[in-house]
Amino acid sequence: IPIIMVTAKTDGEDLKRAFELGAFDYIKKPIDKMEVLARLSAVLEYCEQQKQLQDMAMRDGLTGLYTHTLLLELLEKECCKARRYKTPMAFLMVDIDHFKKVNDTYGHRIGDKVLRLVADTLQVNSRRSDIVGRYGGEEFGIVLQDISLDNAWIVCERIRKSVGELEYRVGGETIKVTISIGMAYKEPEVNADCEKMIMIADKALYQAKGNGRNRTEVIVLSEVT
Image (cartoon, rainbow, N blue to C red; front, side, top):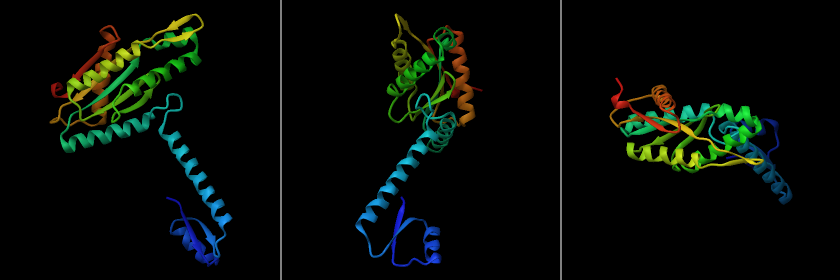
C-alpha cells in the first residue's frame, strides 16, 4: 500500500529517511486540498499501472491464461500442499488435435483466434479453484486441487466435450477442433513433485494421442513403479 507522508519538515535528510522507511510521496504542511487530491490521483494511477504490469507478467499475452512459468510455480506449490496435508490432486496436459493443420490451412491469425477460443472454454469449464495455464504452443496445463479421481474425470470430459462443440466460422467455412487430455492423478498417500506430475501427465497425453485423439487418458501415480 503506497504511503503518503504529511510533514512540516522539508529538510533533505528528513525526506530521505522517510523514503527509506517506505513513503511513496509527501505533502507539506499546511495541507492544501487540491495538492492532496492531485497526489492521491497520482498514487492511484501508479497502483493501477503496477497492477497492469503484474497481470502482464502473470498472464499469457495471447490467451489470458497463466504463463508457463507461473503455471509450474503454482503446480509445485500445490504438490507441496498435497504432500503436507495428504490430499489428492491431478494435473492435466491438454493438446489441441492437429492444430498445425488449422494454422497451415487458415493462417496464424485465425489459429490464434481458435487458441483463444479453446483457452476461454478451458477456463469456463474448470472449477473456480483450478489453475489453468498455457503450457506452450497449443498445449495447456490444468491443476485440479483436492479432487477425487471420479470428479477429475468429470472435469476432463466436460472440457473435452465442450471444446468439441465449438465452432469458429471463417467465411463460408466452419472450423471445429478437438483436444486430447492426459491426466496424472496423485492419490493422497503418494508423494510427487512438479516434475513427476508433468512427466506422468505427458505420458498419459501421449497415450491419448496414440489411441485416436479426442479422448482422455489417466495414469494414477499409485500404480506407477
